[in-house]
Length: 357
Image 1 (cartoon, helix red, strand yellow):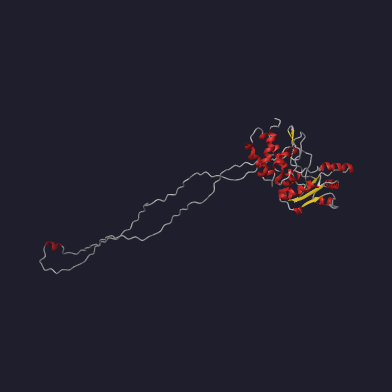
Image 2: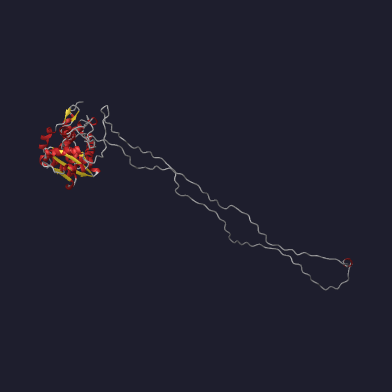
C-alpha cells in the first residue's frame, strides 16, 4: 500500500478531491481529510506513512495556516490514477512550502527522501501530490537540460525446430504352417514260385546244369522333400512430407509514454491555456447536467493539448478522434469518453486555429 498526500488551499477544494476519489472507487474509510484544526498526531502519522520529516512539518504548517490535507492509501496499480485525480485540483507545492518553512525556522539539512512527482516531465516545479512510499521511479535532468525517457519495444522472432511426434515400427518373424501334397511312389517286390515240369532236357538245360548263384534286386521309390524360398510380397515403408503455414500468436511489450499537462494554466508553445475562457461554454451546455465545471476542466484542457500536438496539427476531428479516445481512456480512468468528448472537441476546435505554427 502507498499513502498519497495532497495539500489544498481551502476545504471546498479538498472536499471535491475526496468526492472524485470516491467516484473513482476509493473507499471512504481509507481517505483522510484534515482541515483548520490539525490533529496533534498529524506529523507523526505522516512520518509513519513514509513522508519525510521536513515535508510532514510543511504539511502541518499548511493545515495550521488554513489549508486542507487529503491523504489516501492505495495499491500500487492505482497510484498513478490517484495522483492524476489529486493533481487536477492544483495542490499546494509542498517543496516551496517546505523550503519556506525551513528558511524561517532552522538551517538544518533538507531530507532527500523521494516523493512522487507530477507526471508532466516538462515541469520540475509547481503543485504536486506526494506519495509517502517513496518507491516510484525518478528521471533526472542532465547538464543539457534534457530528460531522457527510454522507450523499449520487444520484437518477436519465430524459428523452427524438429520434434518427434510418432512413427511406424515394422517387425518380422517366422511362423510354420503344415502343408500336404500327394505323390505316387513305385515299389518292386521279388517272389519265388516253383512249378512242377516233366519234359526231356535239351541242350540249354544241359548248359544250365551246373552250380551258380542268381540275385534279383527289389527297388522302390520314396518321397524326397525339397524346399525353395520365393518372394511373394513386399512391405514398403516410406515417408511423405508436407508443408503447412501456421500462425503464431503471442504478445510483445513496449514502453508507451503518455504526457499529460496538469494545472489550471498550462503553457503550450506561444499561447496559454486559460480555463476561465471555457466557463461560458460550460454554462450553456453542461451546467444543468449534474457535473461541476472542475469536472469538465480536464476535458477542455485535453482538447487544448491535442490542438498543440504536432501529430494532430492540420487534421480533421474525425481523423484524430480514435487516437484521442484511446489516450483519454488510458489517462482518465473513471471518466467516460462519451460524457466528455464534446467538450474536448470544442476546446480542440477553439484552440487549433490559434496555435503558432
